[in-house]
Every structure is written in C-alpha cells, then in structure tokens.
Image 1: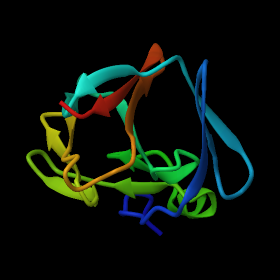
Image 2: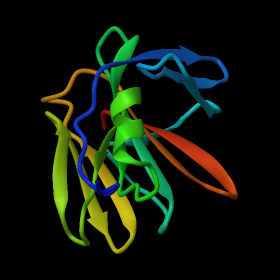
Image 3: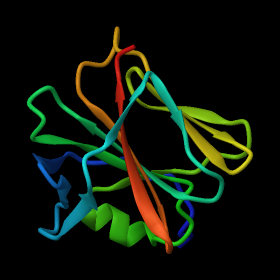
Length: 141
C-alpha cells in the first residue's frame, strides 16, 4: 500500500485556546499547535519545504477538518485512523480542500487562499519542520 495517496478528511474536534489550537483526532489523541495564529488577509504562502497543515473549522469553531498538504511521511492507515486528510500536489497543481478554500503547490511552497463569500468557518495554516512551527489564520480582507 502506498503512503502517498490522497485521503479524504473526517470531522475532528477543535479547541481554540489562549495558547494555541488543539485538534483531537478520531483515535482520541491530540495535537497542539502552539501560539496565537498570526492573522493574514485572504491568502498565505508558506516557506519552501515546510510541512503544511490546513485546519478549516465550522462556524461553531468546535469541529472541522485537518488536511496535510504534500505529506510524504505519514502512512495512509494512520491518517485514516486519526481522521486527518492528505492531498498530494505536483508543482503548479491546485485542489479545493473545502468549498472556498483552495490550496496550490508552487515550487515547494504551499499557497492557501480563502473565498469568504463561499466559506463561513475559520481557516488556519500551520507550517513546521524540525526547527520550529508558525501558525496563521487567514481572515477576510
């Protein structure tokens, strides 16, 4: 079985705290994205080569979907057990993760754009590697 296929996300629990964002996976484990996300208007492009995770909450801000972009390390079975989705994009390719939320690969960078005329939840982008992590919230411009 390949560990590089697209996986559809399931709904996971989300908690927004003063210290960051908590995502509870379907298997009961939690991921904590540290820090208050930096607000950016309408779109963000990550630094090259970073792991990129996109979280889209519903309007209650207590649940949503989490999608890893171009993750080549996590095995399909693990993603399916946790409820995390994955999309694999070639350079220049784009995909709609959720109505109004588009992700595009651009020379090892991930661009995420939100159309708030279509989507009504909150959209967070987390970029990380072994040196650290940064978090953003894409807000309406």
